[in-house]
Image (cartoon, rainbow, N blue to C red; front, side, top):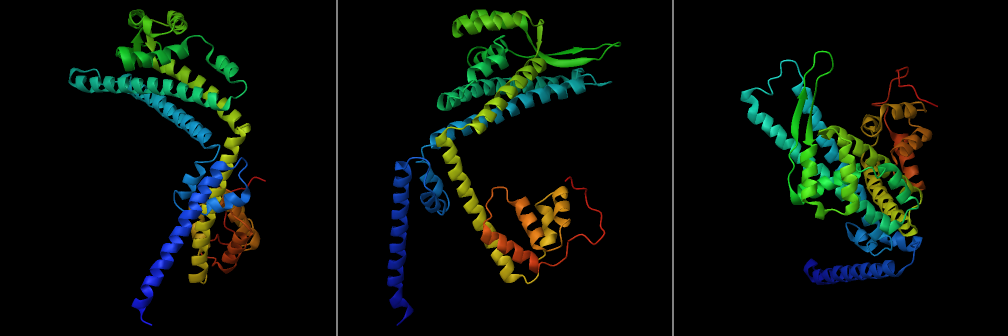
Amino acid sequence: MSILSTTPDFSRILAAQRRREEEEIRRLHTEVAATSIPLPDELLAKVVTKFGDTAQSILRGHAGYRLFRVRESYFASVRVFDIAVGDLLAEIAAFEEEAIREGTKLFDLEQRERLKAIERQIQKELFAAANAALSLVDHARRLQKAVELDGYDAMRLKTFNEDGLHDLVTGLRVLLHHLEVLEAGWQRTRATNRLSTATFTLEKMRLMRTLDEFSDKFSGGQLGRMRRYLEGLPDHIDLAILFSDYRERCRRFNDWLKDQLAAAPPPELADYDRCQLEKTRYSVRTQWNAVLGNWLQNVPNPHVHRHLPKYINEEQLAQVYALPLNSPEQADKVLDLMDDYGAADDAMRRTVRTLFSRASDDGAPQPGAKLPDVDH
């Protein structure tokens, strides 16, 4: 029989195989969407074997997927806020360092355009920080509405004090984004008997006039708290002090929220995380098995010890080399240190032990070599 005469049969076999795979994927979509939590282990085991985005698309039917998206959006918003406020404070600190340096030329006439560029940069960072602050508020509220954490309102009141700082920062976002761009200006103090300072500020009287002009754009409660808070501030409001205080309050609140969410997630979200962890473990295990299998098949004496410093730090290396070289105990220690997700099963542990039993000594510390101290 010629090769050509078998080609149509081979094509039909492949087509039939694809149809069976597509049918199984459709069935898994339906089963996951219709199954109550916790997702049975036998069903999850079938899902995690699907490659690419297929497993993730199936898990989007899980009861915890919506909560997962809300939580991840909140986490992303926290990161953006931290970066935005950090950038604003870093730009102000860089300006201060140059502005108070002995012999600085930043304020000379020929540096006028550069100083204007710094002012524009600060204005951009102020805009970004204020927007990120209000975005974080929205995402935190959306998360709380979805998960209903006990003590949320009490912790919010305890952290932000209702003293008006929170209202002022989020109110700045409304002003800058929708109503009027309030420009921050630089301010420098030069003194011989105390430290010189430099920062960027907002003019309090102009800010209060602007709030009065657009008073209908804020609720009565927020407007009143902003005004009371502003009354206690100096004529020139230091942006570094203002946003440093607000960032610290946000950190305390968001750290509490994350801890509470990690300690007592809704059952749907906890089960979705379990499914994702199993998917990650399967993927890691598959990759490791491929690498280890190729290594064992093609390299008689693998140079394991040359590669270990790429994956574990000095303290961990000291733990590894405190054990007999290439022993099962050393193989187990390396696997435990590298297995961030708990992906290793008994079969992988046996494979790693075999790898070490064949490994060369090349790259391992010489007898008597000084290693970092290990805390016991």
